Image (cartoon, rainbow, N blue to C red; front, side, top):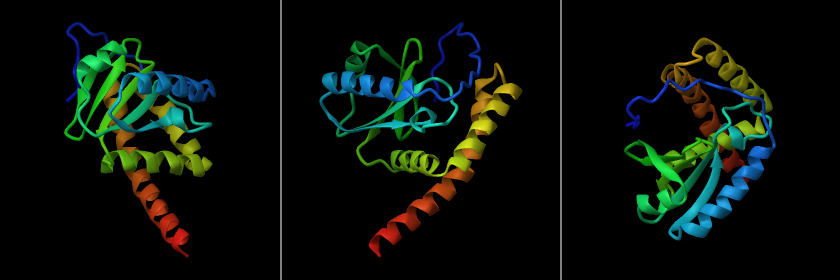
Length: 177
């Protein structure tokens, strides 16, 4: 369930060319989050900004794995507020939406899928480029309709996710010899 503030303006869908600063922004925010939150068992840069060369919305997505639920107060002290609550995770954002923090229980399957998808795009530049092109096209079609942009993007990602899971499974088998 996405939480929307009353009177919130429609958000423009803005895709920008890849910027290597995103990796550095992630590292800085990771340090800040780890200094404040003590029950994190893992932290990961996920989403398009985690894939070198991929065009994206300039929001750094960070996933944290927790052993127990994080108190909203702790996140508020870091400048995060709740924007979405799904059955398996919660999403918090900074006021400027520069960072989104996805909070998962430790070793959650949904998070593992996101990491495998990220690694797939890092490995296969043609898939990365195809997805970047698709996002630019969606932003052109739905410039002020983030919900429609997200629905269409998620359909595309569902197909790619199957390929990524198959690739990951094959990679694991090959490691075994």
